Image 1: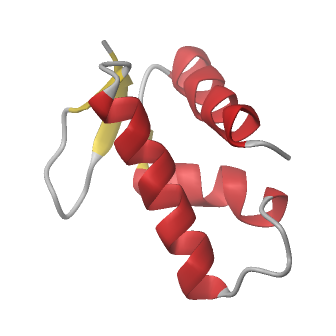
Image 2 (image 1 turned 60 degrees about the vertical axis):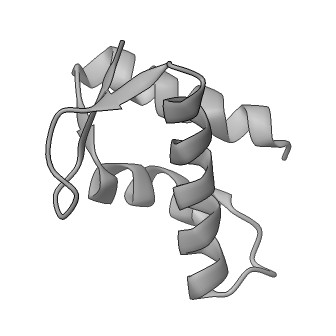
Length: 73
C-alpha cells in the first residue's frame, strides 16, 4: 500500500468522527501496515504520516503533546 492510502485513511477517520486521538489512529492503521515492520517501525511510520498531514496544513492538534486530539483544518 502506498503512503497516500494511509494518509487518506487518517483524513476519512477524522471526517467521520470529528476528531481522533493518536491511539485511535494507531488502532486504525496498525494492522494495515506491512507485517515486515516491527512495533517501533510502525509507530515511527504513523508518526511520520501524522507529521506530514500537519505540515501540509490538513490537520491540527487540539489536544496536547502527551494526548493529541487531531482535527481537520
